[in-house]
Length: 406
Ligand code: SF4
View (cartoon, rainbow, N blue to C red):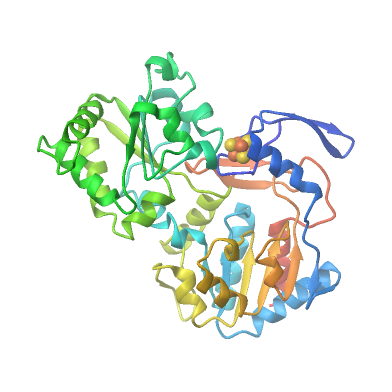
């Protein structure tokens, strides 16, 4: 059985037929998983220094020298890296006295950190499949981002206490600024809010749950939602980028709402993190420092999320981007800043970010060409073997090799 590292669901039921040392027929991949498997043969990163092709040893040496010669290096990314590479990355950051950060510092890191600290209750996808009768997708569109989320875990499947599935046993509620594909599945359960309107929705729902008149236009619908949630036996809240961005770092209302819901029944939060091992990076760094991202090991340990990469880019004089493509998603002003910093790119494929790099060090594709482990977005550890051979080293071996040069 194969595994897919195409997103943070880490589907481990992929049937793979090998054709010699190549991947042949597959079953159970979604469209995104197919694209991930098909990417094996195209747009692969090659070792280079200053635009010239070199051997992997020369590239690793140049990467180590660039980092070792910097005053304030930043190691960024890691969401598309194995747990082993992330662990090696934290060790490298400590050795360099550098900053280390990932995209969660400008997305759902604050939610992940509260979950890991035990301040927001969570559960596994297996609990959701077996027990959840209400699934709330908040600023989250798994039909697009995690295509098998609803079919494997949260809405369509039968489970231990949910034998009738979505037809009678499960309710889907979507809170979003647009009628996303997930909202279309939820039909009557869709609540459209204005951009940035999550805080007002939280306030209104908290009031309705407390038996007060909510301050929203459609009071009756909000009171009906509160009644529905009061009847729930096991609720799951899946959070997306939309919610995290809208709350701008202030989770107090959301945390209070989750607390209120837990006075009525068990309600758990699972963030829908994007790349396959975002949760792994959060956990690895949390175990070391108590923070899930935006940590600096310069002169001890300091921390400051507040758009971590923006803070670090002001002072950093070398950056190593690992398993990540920040230039593709950062606001243009920050991407321009990033482009000016001498960069090492470590990854399996060419990206917009790797096109900016002075040094490129390729890796094998985890789960297909290299084994390792990752944490599913619900925190469950998934281990995997390689399916086919590769001329490239694993990401963990590449980081360890670079560390030898520092
Ligand atoms: S849902 Fe994600 S992990 Fe599962 S097959 Fe699709 S891309 Fe791969």
